[in-house]
Image (cartoon, rainbow, N blue to C red; front, side, top):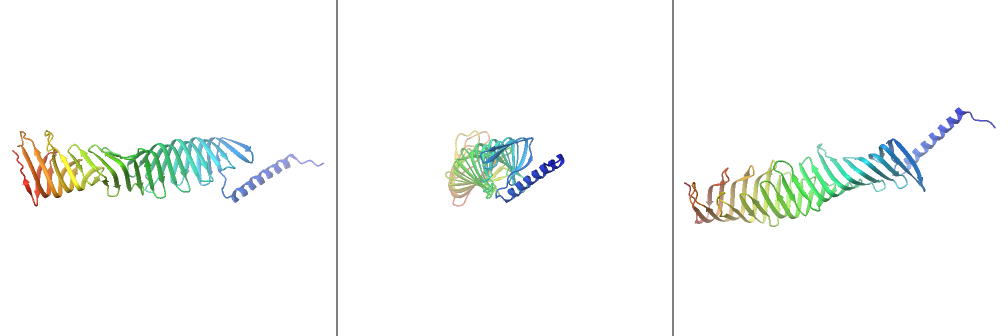
Length: 368
């Protein structure tokens, strides 16, 4: 029998391996779901289980599975089931999303990602700003572009400078729509931050519009406000409160069927009350008596968070009480009319009262 030389033997082995790899490549190209593409791993262990293989990757793992890029400390890839399980410093890059977690399971057949423990999701916007989500658990569906976060959910939108928290968040990336449940809260960052909590919150078109429903509570350094329903429009920086809205501050308490707040540079610029409006206020800090005004509509102008001008219109009914002081005489006035304007000075004291049109009742204002 003729012996094959060692050189030829090595050549045949190399040719056979090359043929095998080429055959596997052709097979992978023909399958509907392409296999993963390994970029790096410090160690690779391939185990055959029944009819399939499990690939264990250890150390500095980096691979692509479909169009999604993965990094981790370890990964198990179940080739028959087309499932990848990653552990330790997991990073997943998919289109506009960067996802991080301690544990990630990827189901290639359904394009579903399950992220657990210390989950962080960064979403990049076209204007280069970033929206972030933190949670203990996130389910992300690549094809549908839907994200579901659970447990200790935190979010931040850099463009709107908006923070949020809740127990459950559903986010539909294609529509830019999401809703927060289980003690949801939103807050505008900054020195004079405004916090809003409710039973449920929804945002539309990437926070261009926010809707809060049931037990809505709005708080800031300058005021508190409760209602059943809130609509916020980012472009106008305008909030509409419905469902028995009640406004409370150091200088006044107010209520109406509808209450609108307008902001500028995160500070309240204007307030508008519509239908069955009433406001109660003290004429000065030393007075224990309350003055009040009711009307069909009311307008408040603010500066540095304080009321500077009050304007009441249609069916105005007012009661004004001023105690006697070293600077002021006692005054008790009750009047009705069509239009009332009150100006307030920097010391938060009433400076002028002007009742106009169809004025009835006693109207006096004395000042030493």
